[in-house]
Structure formats: structure tokens, C-alpha cells
Amino acid sequence: MCLLPSPDTFPSPPSSSPTLPPTFVPKDALSLAAYSLASSHLHPTILNHSIRVFLYAKLIAASEANAYASGYLTAEKNLALLFTACILHDIGTTPSHNGTQRFEVCGGDAAYTLLTSPPHSPTYSEADAHSVWTAISLHTSPGIAERIHPLSKLVRAAVLSDFHRGVEINKDFEKEFPRLGIEKVLGDAVVEQAVSRPEKARMATWAGVMLRSYEENPGWQGVNKGF
Image (cartoon, rainbow, N blue to C red; front, side):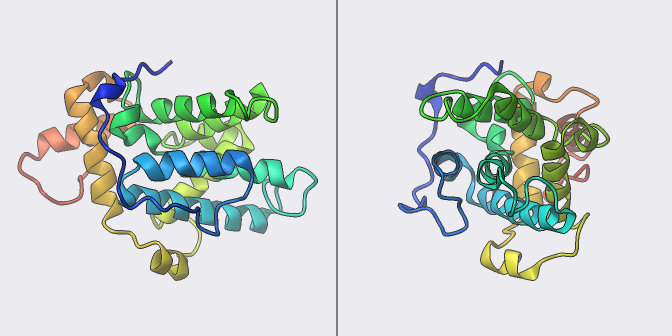
């Protein structure tokens, strides 16, 4: 479990959080709660990235006609799980969820807690919660995320797509939800945590690669060279 700092150390949420959820947010209770959590804590640049990841995930699911695409009997439930995994996949980069584990695991724990707490716990099973935890916790783990669960594979593919390493770039997504320097903002957030808590950036992890690059390039102000 990711041990979190005292709530007294949390910063104020971004003041730009909307009162009503945008139209792309599924209307089920879990998705609305996940969006509220994300929009209250994520850096606006990382929030935009997380939204684009969800939009890419829907495109990929539809192209593969898998269980997370529309048209299936479990489509509404699966869409909620997909949205939650996508919108919260970087929640571990926030000060309020900066615990003792890797940022990915802290994010997975936050989503797991959401799914297993009232009012969502009667609707979603332990297996549902674990699938979301796995998708978030392993989204930077190539070769594992793709094989451990269909949801993990889908989230991983969508993340890569938003970093222009997957499906064809969708300019409409980036026009509506601008990139705003996501590579630098996300990289800096991960490194900032790792500098203060090196145990969050073990050598074989993505954060570890980012931290080593930061240490090897003192004074560098651009996008982390390990990104």
C-alpha cells in the first residue's frame, strides 16, 4: 500500500476545475467520481494528457472490437473501468498522492480505493478494482502491461499513442485538449518526487531512468533526456 503524506501538506486544488464534467466523461457514478478526483488534483497539462489517453483508448478499443468497445453487454461497466484507469493513470504524480511507492503504484492504489469504497464497491468486484490497479501500476512497464490484462494493454497502448508512438496522431484531440508541454511537465513531476524520495525511482523503473538523466545533465532546462 502506498503510504501518503498528511492531508495538511496537500496544496490547494487547481482553481480552474470545472463545476460540471465535460461531455466526454461517462455519466456513471464511478466515472464522475474519478473525473472529480483527477480534475481537482492533476496539473492541467497532465489532466489534458489523461483525457487524450482515454480518447485514444476508445479509438483503439473500437478498432480492435474488444470488450472495452461500445456494443457489448458490459459496455457501460467496462467504459467506466477504462475511463477510471485512463483519467487516474498519472494521479500518483500529484502531491496529494505522493506516497512511498512508485508514482504508478500510488496512482493504482488511489483508483483501487475509489473502486472499493462506497458507493462504488457494491457495483464493482475485487477483480474489477484489481484490473484498474494493474492497468495504472504497469502503464510504464513495456512487455508486461501488454500481456497481463486486456485493460492494461489498452491503457498502455493509449499512453504510447498520446506520446506519438502508437496509432495515427489525432489532431482533433490535441486541438481540444492541447499538449501544453506534457513531456516536460510530466517528466519534471516524476523527477521532483524522485529527488526527494529516491526509493520511488528504483534503477529498473521509468522514474529511475528519468532521475539518472536528471543527475547526469545538471542545469538542463528542456524535456528530460530520458523521456
